[in-house]
Amino acid sequence: MRFFSESRIFLVVSVSLYLVMKALFAFDIISPYIQQICLYAVIVALTAIGLNVIYGYTGQFSLGHAAFYGIGAYASAYLTKILAIEGVLPFIPVLVFCGVVSGIMGYLIGIPILRLRDDFLAIATLGFGTLVRVFLDNSDKFAESLGGSRGFVGIPRITNLELVFFFLVFVVIITRNLIHSRYGLFWRCIKDDELAATSVGINTTHMKLMAFTYGCILAGIGGALYANLYSFLHPSNFDILRSIDFLIIVIIGGMGSIMGTIYASIIWVGFIEGLRIVLPAQVLDLRWVVIPLLLIALMIWRPYGLMTKRRR
Amino acid sequence: MKILEVRDLEKSFGGVKAVDRISFHIEEGEVFSVIGPNGAGKTTMFNLITGLYRPDNGRIIFLNNDITKTPTYMLIHFGIARTFQNMRLFSNLTVLENVMSSLLSKKTYNLFSAVFRTKRYATSEKTAEEKARGFIDFFGLSGKEDYTASSLSYGEQRRLELARALSTQPRLLLIDEPGAGMNPKEISDLAETIKTIRQRYSVTIAIIEHQMNLVMNISDRIMVMDFGEKIMEGTPQEVKKDKRVIEAYLGEEME
Image 1 (cartoon, rainbow over the protein chains, first blue to last red):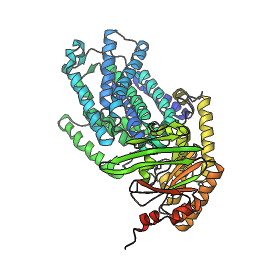
Image 2 (image 1 turned 135 degrees about the vertical axis):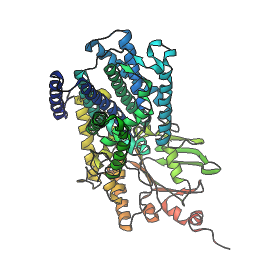
Image 3 (image 1 turned 90 degrees about the vertical axis):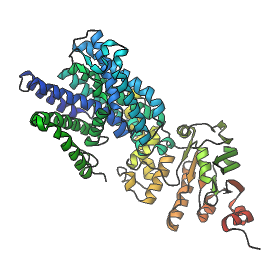
Image 4 (image 1 turned 60 degrees about the vertical axis):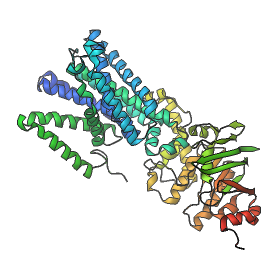
């Protein structure tokens, strides 16, 4: 078994990055608020990698990624609250379980909708995203503690630096191994030409479903880490706009680039949250003028993303 | 021995009968050509055989298995491979990846092996790559393994598509208009390639083609189609002389 092969450089870099972050956190060099943003950026990266597998590699346009992120978040919030979990170790099985719950939802939704293509698939995933949002808004009718549109409060704060780093490293290596295997090759074949993929013997339905489920598992884990980082959830955090955030990250990072997605997540979160600190409160909303302009500029000059070189 | 048998195959699109009760068979080891004017239903018939369309009626039997309802992706595992009229390569993938895609689509290793990089993964990938390089070499594309398929010339892309189809070592290879857009020199090279493929890989070949000199040169038997119907079937000599074929191609004589 060579699980870590080809990932040595990545491991060295991430471990040293972890040590630097740990030092910064431990000596209170950066404020708890910024610490939280750092963790959040890693969580976003993890979730965006899931969307990159679905969209960047397999070419299945999804506007519902935030819904699966939300499912993971609410599942984890509910479980950690009723089970009164506080430690990191008992939290790990909950995280994995929340990933699986999201994955199963993705699988079940994927069976009917993945036979659709491009824009039709986008509408269908958008519909599912809206459905989840509406469900979460009314969730207090099913279980009082879910909070409905008032938001879910009092979630135990468990997510820490070690946990997010461990999951990110783990997910990156698994994803990379998958991408470099026959499954990754099939995904890219499907993105390129689905009909040709079928005729070279690839079970395209099966492979699309697999990519979608895997992406949703990552979203579920990301959501669970998120819920137990902020200890408060609101349905508006999981609507279409959040899905578009993930989509933008995948596109900025370059479709089909894992490292690009990580950089783009850090830039994206850093930019939005960073401007919140730098800009005075009166002009804070100018962010939503600056960011779209930058996106337009990016699409004109670097349509394949910041990190991907122009193709031959 | 019959390798493929088609019985009373029918397919309509709206009111148009694209394939109208066609029956024929292909003998193992032969080169069987299908000719006919544009819109005669030749490609539709290939699409029916490979499961891209479902027939309204009729049966398709491959080596005693009824494959009428078999999904397309399974056919390569039965031993049927094809190429397309307007080429369908994975244009953003490299030449090597294009050939490996079909080789790895056989059950080589599972998800566990892929994630944990087991020995099985390493050996399967290695044998597939070696095999792919062999085919790339045979089709004169060596040195271009890492080029994207879209960067190849037209003729090279045609050869790559053949390499990808042949790499799974099918029993039956369906080739849809390989000579389209080729000059006479390329056509005669193509005829040689097809002859070599047939001998070297002992594969049965069914081919749709418009270039008469190519068809007459390589075929054992020819089937002629027009307006979805089978007009006749016979050796190249018989087809050349047949009045109905001449009519279909050149039009009826004016009285």
